[in-house]
Image 1 (cartoon, rainbow, N blue to C red):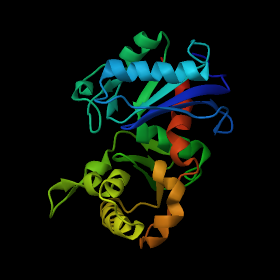
Image 2 (cartoon, rainbow, N blue to C red):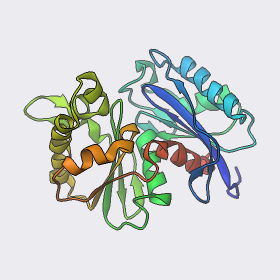
Image 3 (cartoon, one colour):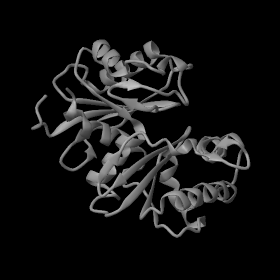
Length: 255
C-alpha cells in the first residue's frame, strides 16, 4: 500500500460504540463528521463486522481506494486478538485482521485501541516531542493504556487490568468512566478512585507525563484539577477522536 496517501479512514471499535471518519494524515484532523453506531449486543465478530460496514457505507468509503485502519479493545499480536475484556469471548485467539480484510475486501491495519490513540498523540498531540515515558489512559467502558517511551510505542500494555492488592479486583472495574455512570458517582467521588489508580501507576513506572483520553476527556476540567499527582496530567489533544486518528495514521502500515 502506498505511503504517499494524505488521507485515510480510521475506525475505532469500542465496548459501546463504533466510530469512524476520514482523516487528514498531515494535520491529524477529521475531514468528515464522525459516524457512530452502537456496538452490537454481545459484540461477536460477524455482528461487529456488519456494524463496521455500516460506518464505511455511511462515510462513502466502502471501496479500497482509501487506506483503512481499525482499532479494537483487545491485545493484538500480528493481527490476532488475544483478549476480550468488553467484547465476546470469541475474539480470544481470533485472526481478526484477516477476518476484517476478507469481510471488507481490502487491506487494513488492525491494532489495540489505546495504542492507536497513543500514536495519534505522539504524532499530532500532547505526547509530541515529549522525552521519557508517557502513559496514555483511555477512560471509557474500561481503561485502556498506551506506553510511549521517547515517542516509541510499547504495545499492548493493558494497565487497566492492574489489580488493587487489597481488593483483588481490576482497577478498571471501579475507576473506568462506566463505573462512574453505573454507580452515579459525583466527579469528586470518581476522582478519588482515579487518584488511587494514577498513584499506583506513578509508583510502578515514574512516568514523565499522563495523557487522558476517552469520551470523558471532553470533561477534563471537571476531574483533572481534583487529582494530586507528582506527574503532569493533561487531556488528549484529540479527546475521544484519538483512536480514529491513530487508526487512520497506522493504516499505511498495512501489509
